[in-house]
Amino acid sequence: MSKPILTIDNLTKRFGGVTAVNGINLEVMPKETIAIIGPNGAGKTTFYNMVSGRMQPTEGKITLDGQDITGLPPHKISRLGVSRSFQINNIFPEMTVQENVEVVLSAYHGHSRKLFNIASRNTGIQQEAVEYLKRLGIDSLKDQRAEVISYGDKRLLEIAMVLATRPKLVLLDEPTAGMTPDETRRTTRLVKSLADSGDYTFLITEHDMDVVFNLADRILVMHRGEKLFAGTPEEVKNHPEVRVAYLGEEDEEVVEEANA
Amino acid sequence: MKTKILMGLMAVVIAGLIAVPWIASYFYIFILTEILILGLFAASFNLIFGYTGMLSFGHAAFFGIGSYATALVLIHLEWPFLACLLVSMGASALLALVIGFLSVRLNEVYFAMLTLAFGMMVFAIAYQWRSVTNGSDGLAGFTLGSFGLGLDLTLGNPAVYYHVVLAIVAIAAVVLYLICRSSFGMILRAIRQNPERVSFAGLNVRTYRLVAFVIAGTFAGLAGGLIAPFLRVASPELLHWSMSAEPVLMAILGGTGYFLGPFVGSAVFVLLETWITSFTESWMLVLGIILAMMVIFFRKGLLGTALDWWLEVKK
Image (tube, rainbow over all chains, first blue to last red; front, side, top):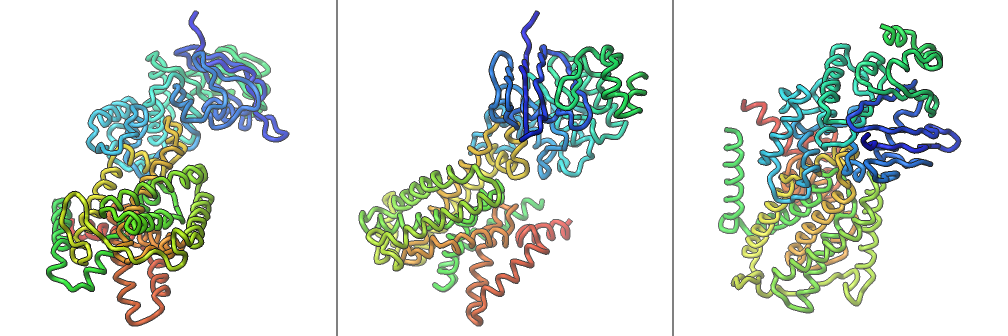
């Protein structure tokens, strides 16, 4: 039995009187894909914000690969191997698609401290950037300005940027939100193949139950900041409380999809 | 093809700048000297404004301290001019490190206000510390001796001084340009567009902002070291907050997205000021109208708009 890559211990976040995340425990094993589901306001994004260093937890402990990372700033957590995407596209709009990945790669390789190299002649980084774009199937867009590519392609670009930091743990925050059905299928396939490659450990939040049941090894169901249930996709589908509290009442369509 | 035409144009401009003392009167030599020095001042500012996205309202502090440093070294130590300039750069780098350390942690309007506040403090010190700075009169009465490096230059001659300024500004501009083109420069542009994404790529944005701030301050100090002998005085006006507005205006006038934009802005600013003040006193009114037009209609500045037009027309 290998050791967990991420251990979440009693993680809690309060905003004044509101408890957004309440006493969450979770162990993520290497190469595992875990989905976090729950209705809007369940605390998924707050949970992500604490793991990635964007917010300080009120209570609890986050351990990455044996190291306590609770409350560290984002750049340190990123350096230690946690990389995340955002619900809203978070790219460099005025740069080309390829340059977007180059920025992340320069940071990763420590080139960002070089004042007198010529970035546009850094062929090593450029080739690597194209490699990552190929992996996401968007290398044909490499010379486009990032702000002009389609919404779905932007999301894929962000995943390329997330992977370029060679993370031990990848956090994807609703990777298919706002995508067309076609783009959703494409993205799901891509993430699935990345997960199956055994190179990455994923934590994914998602509203689309199709995507969740397709990708996840285990699912954590959150409701009002608390853990409602955790288990395999099968167990989640058949869990009565989950069906009532989340799948059933929130969205009829979700249940249909889940049962399909 | 177009790149070649632009390179050719640059070469002509540089050759023209070198030839000016043989073809133009002292009046134009003075104007060009001022354009070059203020252009460097504005270009140093644009490293943090146009590239990194930090609007500082206190950049004159570094320009001013550079001019005072050179004046003080010339008065008390009579060192060669090159050594004076190095002292100016060192002094402004140190000041930028202190002000930057306290300012870069804040964003947007708070950063702007804090740099403005520090700029005013530096001004107040220069204004009131009479024993060192000679108060409101400023430091005057210094003379340039040798240049340094064993070069035999008559710096008192405006034509010679112009050539020295041209050479130093050109070298400084090349260094700044290389920094902008480097991986570090790429990170600065990334920070302007999306600082949060940069920190999630594993970089401490605050450190990068601070380094950019210190580099910008250092080159502003160099520009200040060049202006003191040109004006023959280092006075508190060079530190005044209204002086901090000049590089902002020049960068916007020329185009913040282009490396040479601030130099173009400086040229237009100085030429217009000279020309308009020769027949009316309402220079500020005219400048205000031009700036409003630039911001409303020509966001890319004069250089950016001209380049766009040229690329569009000459397909």
